[in-house]
Length: 83
Image 1: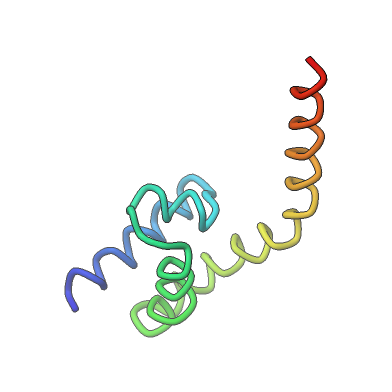
Image 2 (image 1 turned 45 degrees about the vertical axis):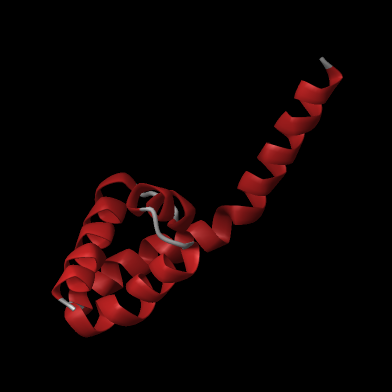
């Protein structure tokens, strides 16, 4: 359990420092997006409530802008296809 708690805290600190998405954190820690989601929404809340609240704000922001990021990715994809 100690390993998991350490991973959760490291994920939270990295998100706060860099503003990474769940997908980016999953890649860094070589775990699934589901694991990171569970780490940051369930486990972190039990470990450190104040840290959870800070991370939750960033994750909510990512949800708010995901449609913009998706549109930009699609636009870039089709521009590359035309070349």
